[in-house]
Image (cartoon, rainbow, N blue to C red; front, top):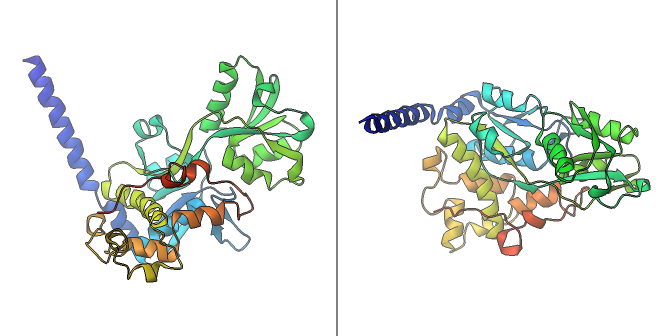
Length: 341
């Protein structure tokens, strides 16, 4: 009998939770439409991911994801306000509703979803933590950093991974933590630390800020899994799906060969997959609260995933990062999107 009562109690709790989530569904999209623009929390200064120039024009992979979302909603990629977020304040800002989506090279972890009440909508960059040192240090491996001082940004998984790496390899180190990545990099550049650690993508981005780029080397070890992607608050399934499927639409577009330049020509194709992607067959925007051509708008205004990657961080950019794991699954990577159908 006790087991039966407990079962009913669990079921009732589940129905209450589901009802609460249902009540919130669509609230975020409605607020954005009424406001007239998306509020996107992003990195205040990480080249390739989120970085404003002197005129306040933002660029980066995360920036383009937010532009894709607002293109899907408004058919206008400029209807977005970018709010600089520190690592310390980013999750609180999302929880409080200060921002609609957090697209700030954040690592998807279990505790951030289960404990903070967030949901990660996908992985727009597969990364891993690494180390950068001066060439003159003569170090060729992170395993040679015993006794080294390491600059790191506090309040991040980077800080935790750093401790795990040295502990698991029975190495000693001095961790010197800073509130922002800029402070950590400046301390490293001034010689206060022997090494600087962050995501490998961040190391390449930060290295270009240094006076003599070739004097610094990124060590070969990748010491963690860092799946980076956009996050939203729990409780609004529709908004979660809009953010997630914006990313998926960009991946599917690349896989199908649909680009910013040829999207109008591709719209005339007889391919059922492309027709569904671009909205000329079926109405796959209805369930999202969007128009049938929502993904056409994304590609037309922002481009496919490959275009966004190459422009911001790829080998044609200042960072010159190879696609690697971020290549399509058909080309040796692990970027893979469910179909639109």
